[in-house]
Length: 547
Image (tube, rainbow, N blue to C red):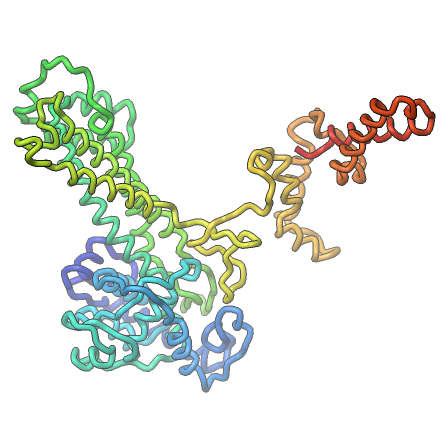
């Protein structure tokens, strides 16, 4: 039995519910907090207070007031409009993991839902009713709006669900499980679709699988070393203490324990070979680095598992409704990217060891590990398949937390305009070549001023805040450079020269050509003066040109 109090939840408990069907219950203290928060919401609603998502629209419609009589319809419309995901459904384990995370977050008592809503969410887990949730549709910047909306559809008897291994309508699934759909009240639709539980669920299960993978990788590495007749001296405690990463120390300790009583290792102790290839010799370093990455990812996911990611949030003791940005998925997105990059390295190193074993004739192994070479191909194609999978794994391990390039460097979603979405790619706001952008002065000039500074300037005569003054000071220091000395290309020049750089250079070339190729005309006074002026302006423009 997993008890949810809104403050404690382990990854192992999430897995037990998601994969093994362990039952869930909400503690008495958590139920009391949820009830108090609901009373608070209803009191605010009865007084007619302006509350985001309760008496107003959503996103860019936040300034549009909604008649209190339409509060229930507002929440229902929100859920239906946001259930716009697409693609293949997420697997049952991921959805169940998201369900227990969602119940835990709501049990914290900062969302203002009814107890009946929380109870139904828990009963879906206990009775095996799993909403059908499309895998695509979550931007990340707004949390998991679309996936959570699909999960909420089942609570109101809409959409599809899986019950006893069969996909059916949510209404049928609830009826067969002996459950009754809820009617959403004020704020409930918003509370049920806001959050990061789906991405956190996927990351939580991924962390646990990665930890087991590393345990297996150490065992496989030890067995491969035995088969390759390699040396275990690289796992010596003294070597690995000189690079004191926790993961490296643990990996070396694991391998020492696995090979401690190996007769195979003792049989070739005096073989004369000095060292083995990287894929054997560097197991503690590589597996250790991956272990440290998995440890970091676990730390982030454990914090996210007990976080409240709703918006707005209810603070009963402070008599406050506060809007924030806890729904943003950046912490999980970054740690998930780190996790998959790290795990890809384990696969890459394992494939290289497989290659060496299949070509280990110098170590006394038959080619492709077959006893009847020629008649049988052995494990040759197994290594080909492994190489193909490693390449595919590397492609999938590419970082997803990036900005998709659009004309202004953002990939906007209309609800909140230009904003940081944890699935898009950051671009510079300049078309200047990279070797020019690298110079700090060029970077300053290419941007001129940040958008923030431009907006502050538009405030007119109002006094700038400390941040704006600090920005101006930074810009001034960039203009002046680290010292008062200026390089040749930073010499001051009139604006009309520097802005027409190429024009003056072309005129300078024309002036030189005029002087050299038309000597009979050149010696005329006026022509001499004009040609010399062109040359001088061209030289000034060339030396003051921006680098």
